[in-house]
Length: 247
Length: 291
Image (cartoon, rainbow over all chains, first blue to last red; front, side, top):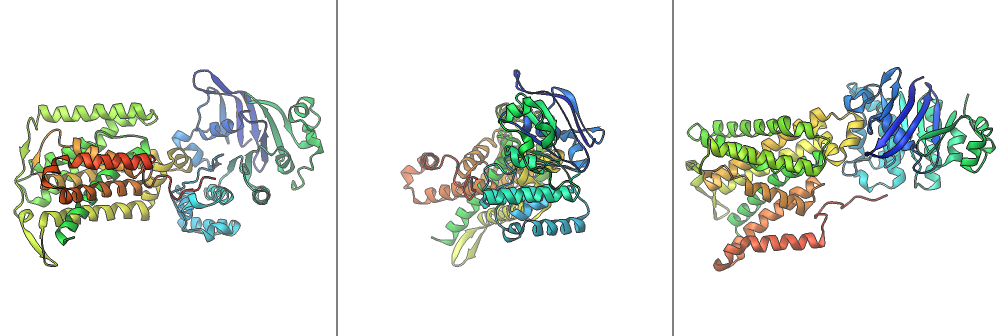
């Protein structure tokens, strides 16, 4: 497994246990989603992978090695993270934000080519290259956040609610990009409120219930056979037209 | 407005802008309201006093060295272990550093104020566009203006500058992208040390003396200017400092002689009014879309 979260417990403050014993795995080349209600602990799990919040107990390994953002292992391991609030530097220009995506890279020519590739993927970023990123719309900022994350040439891309609060046309665009990245072979762990869209595009989906307990895991069809999951989601995942892109 | 007034106003504005950038840079990156900033200024001033009989480039160079060393030592000995501490803890720590450095200076090398003999060229005047302009004011403008331009170049055009600005806005995200805390934080302290040294050189030229508590007033000016301009915005902070300096010069000129003693009352009343209208500062929050 590329990413292995084993029996993770994550605590906020002295008494709030946000995640209790979550275990999940992501294989190389997979698109895996985490779905569940607000406060289920999905985003906390991504933060724990990045080392933004510490583990109380349990283990997170990437390709067999522990992840720890404080020692920059996540950057060295090429794990890219797009947080829920997008993490855009609003006072920097679009171009400066993109340059920061490759801040650790020494191959400057290849980086320039990668920036060019992302500008082709997200043409709006070329249009606003010199513009302050804080002036972009929410959808444009999300495209910038994803483009910046891709400049690390990630082995694992963590996307936290990338379509939250966006217009339907931008939601379609973001999901199209996610599917295309998956087809290019990128490994993606996606946290998504839109359970139907997540089930449609994912190879496997974890259904997470507060506080960070995995209710079930599998394809949409497999999850549809789990009564607890159907009861929790309020619909049967097997009704979702899923995984059409999977080879 | 005469040329000499303009030079004095813009020069003092540039000096105050330097002071505010020094405060705002560390606040942005570490959440640190660095009350020890005044002691970095004092360290540079002490170097000016110590090397006052050496050629002036040596004194200036040593002021830079002293300020940068004190800035880096404060980072390594006090703030390094508190990087993840809350802002109040950091602020108390900076008070402690400030008082400790000031007390050590008072007990050892600066028990009382010491005079620094002014360089002869500073007392001269030049004819500029028909006005007699003090060389000291021109040098204040040139040095502080040059330093501001250099800071603008560093922050705006270099990779390190982009990392510093990103860290000042969202250090957590910057770290996730690979910006190294162990690089940007010491670099920020070096920049702060250099800015403090340049400010200190100008202050010693203007005041002609050095004392253990001489950093208090410039540190307060830096804090007030940064609050006026917007603590989370380096450009705003610089603007706040500049306006504070320009307003100080303006008040000195327009106030009648019997009201000059109340200059700071007028100045800080204006500051309070500005903060009532824009509590977030002049530029903070401007040109950023909430989405």
